[in-house]
Each structure stands twice: as structure tokens, then as C-alpha cells.
Amino acid sequence: MGAQDYFARTQTITIATTTKDGREITTPIWGVLVDGIPYIRSGYGDTAAWYRRLRRTGRAAFADRGVRHEARLAIVTDEATKKAVDNAYKAKYHGQGMALRQAVTSPARDYTLKVVLGD
Image (cartoon, helix red, strand yellow):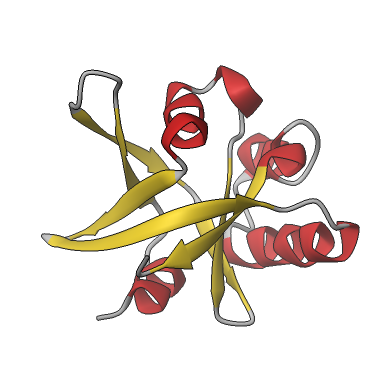
């Protein structure tokens, strides 16, 4: 399955980022699709270690049952896209209470990233 399928069917995405000394660390996070494009957010802003590693390298991979989806990430700044991502989180993670509220409000929405696959 492709990365878009992975984001669509998987509740908890596994992101792999690299430390300064070259070790890979995997972290479970939420991710959504908007018009076929994957997006992720850091619920803890730049205090999340995976987010800091990602910002340092600009690259990550998503691990899907032994299949890797290599990607680079782009910061989302436009409000229309952030609102569309909010709606995708609300649809995918409805019923998740406080965790969902955290994902669709600041600071998490200020750390919205577009996943650019295959680079």
C-alpha cells in the first residue's frame, strides 16, 4: 500500500526521525489526509523531540509494517489549509476528547506540517 493509504487507514502513524549521531527513533503520532495529501502536527509544538529532529533535518520516514515511506516536510502557514487539516483531524479522531481538542487548537495547529512523499 502507498503512503496515502497508510495515512488514511492507520489511526496512529509511526514517524522515524534521525538524531544528530545518526540513530533512528520512531514515534507514534496522529496524521491525516486532506485532498490526498498527508499532514501531521506536533501536539507539543517545538518541545517534542521528534519535531525538533525533523526541523533539523527536514526529512523523516513513515514506517508501515516494514515498508518505509521517505518524506520531507514543509511548514504550513496558510489558514485555509490549517482549517482543512483541523476538519480532517476532527473527522478521523472524533471521540478522542481532550487529545483531539489539543490537536486542533494552538499550539498544535501552529505546528502543522505537509508531508511531501518520495523525495
